[in-house]
Amino acid sequence: MLFYPLLFKPIFKERIWGGIKLKEVLNKSFDGSQIGESWELTTVENDISVVVNGAFEGLNLNQLIEKYPTELLGVNSIQHFGNNFPLLFKFIDAKEDLSIQVHPDDVLAKERHNSFGKTEMWYVMQADDNARLVVGFKDKTNKKEYQEHLENKTLVAVLNETPVKAGDAFFLETGTVHAIGAGVLIAEIQQTSDITYRLYDWDRIDANGVGRELHTDLALDAINFEPTNTKLDYEVVKNKSVNLVECPFFKTNILQISDIYNWKKTKESFTVLMCTEGSFTINMLHFKAEFKKGDTILIPAIIDSFEIIGEATLLEITI
Image (cartoon, rainbow, N blue to C red):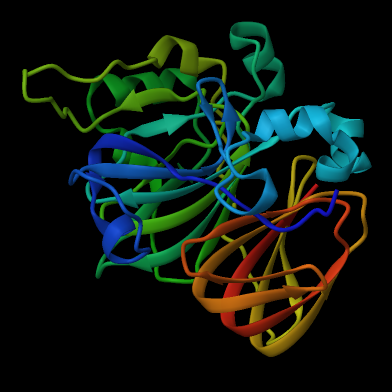
């Protein structure tokens, strides 16, 4: 079997806070005007990605893993996560503020939901003027003070609101209270989990006058009440892979391609390439295809080299 870079059909999620930037900025094709998320690569139950290119077209990611676990995932991923695809890749369009929320760690998520926890990172692809993110507490606090602010609807006053622009990147460990602010388009990399504890939703209601469910009791044991440094410092170097994040769940580099780049890696892990700007061609002996901004490509572990031609910015994610 000749393995090749895999492209998948996006799974679109309508959200009360969603907009149309996924269509306008990333050229995604969908109906509706409140699409908040494009799940690019996922094996979350009932949301399993399906291949749309090449010989594997029509097969879903779990079917591929079942047939070719080592060739697809690599020994690093299998050693740590078995034959489970360990990550979920999204593009998120926040037309309005997302809820203030927190995610549990592996231990709590396993105990309560039989799930992975949800460590994640954000890369800002576009941000309107005055856009911001909410990331962690300004100062150290505790459960009692936190609950008082929650009850008094003053929680935002003790949280860290950070102005953002395109190219900013953030790493959010589990327990970090956070929210994506209005006007931000983000590429998100996270553990395979859909567990979110919603703390505060800006008193927002739907067309029927009903607010979304909150999970304030569940969240208490998940929150890190210490201030955290989430913003990542880095400098882009053309045609060089620059590290952004390295944690037990994933490693993310940023790679700015200019003209021709000879891409190489070991065969120990799959790689995912998220194109955040520009376009490029992958050229291999038995494969050649063009990709563009908004594409998320899975490179099977067995593939260790190819040529990239173009002008593009890529996030490279491995285990």
